[in-house]
Amino acid sequence: MITEEELAGTVGHSMPGGTARVEHYADWLLRDALGAPPGEPGLAHPTFAFLAAQGGVGLSLEEVFAVFGASSADGPMLGEWAVDFAEPLRLDVDYAVTCVVEAACRKTGARTGVFDLVTVRIELTGPDGRVHVTVRPTYVFPRRSAVRA
Amino acid sequence: MKVGDLLAQRVVESVDPEKMKIAAALLRDPNMIHLDPAVTERLGMGSRVVNQGPLNLGYVHTLLEGYGQVVASRFRFHGNVVAGDRVVAGGRVTAVDGDLVDCEVWLDVTGGARAVSGTVRIRRAR
Image (cartoon, rainbow over all chains, first blue to last red; front, side, top):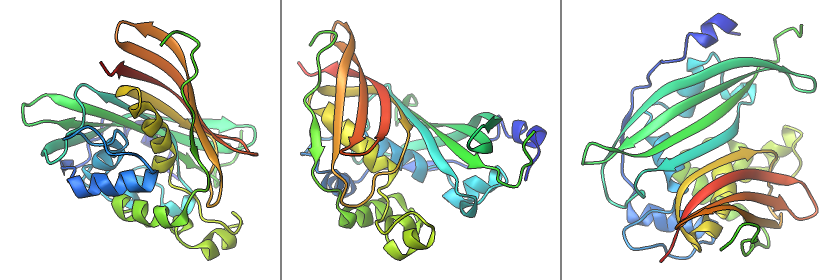
C-alpha cells in the first residue's frame, strides 16, 4: 500500500491525455441503453461526458488505478462524479482531453476501515481552444491491508 | 417551475442486463460483475449482474433532458442497482434564477435503497 505521503504526492500528476469524439452511433447506443429519447440534433446525451472523459485520459482504468498503488482486485469504486458544461457536448467534434489529479486524501471509516479518496479533473477542450466540459470523478480505494489506528 | 416542484419521475420497470453489455462495450469496462452472474455470485454479490454507475446517473440525466440542458451535475453513488431492479429517477426544484434551475435529484431502487443522489443545474428549454 502506498504511504499517505506518496498518495498526497500524486496531486498535480498529469495523465497522458488524448482526444475524444462522440460518434452519433455511440450516442444512439447509449440512449438505447438508457431508454432515452433522441436528443437535440448535434448534441450528445449529457452522460456521454463520462465516457468521453474516461476514454480520453490516455490510460486504461487499470493503469489509472496503478497511479494510486491500487488495482481492480482491490475493489475500487466510483464514489462521486461531477460534470460542468460550459458548452453542451457535441456529436462528431474532436475534443482535446487533459487529466490531472486534483485531490487525494486518506480517510478511516468506522465500518469501512482505511480508504483513499482521489479526485481527478478531466477537461475537454473544443476546436475553439476553450474548455467546454469539465468532469471530476472521485474514486474510492479501499486499503484493506492497512491497520486501523 | 418554482422552488419545491417535483420533477416528473422517470421509471425503469426492470433494469435489463442486455443493456449492461452495450454499456460495457461503450465504456470499455472489463469488470465482469456487469456481465456474468457467475462472477457476482462468486464475489458474494448475489446472482444478478450489477448495473454500471454511468447508467444509473444516466437515468437521472435522461429525466433532466426533458426539462432543458444540463449545465452542471454532481452525483454521489450510495449503492448498487442490479438486473431486474425497478428504479425511479426523481428530483425537486431547489432554486430558480431566470432560466437556470437548480434541483436535488435521486435514483431509488423500488423496495430498496437510494442508489444515487445529487444536485444539478439545468437551463430551461425556451
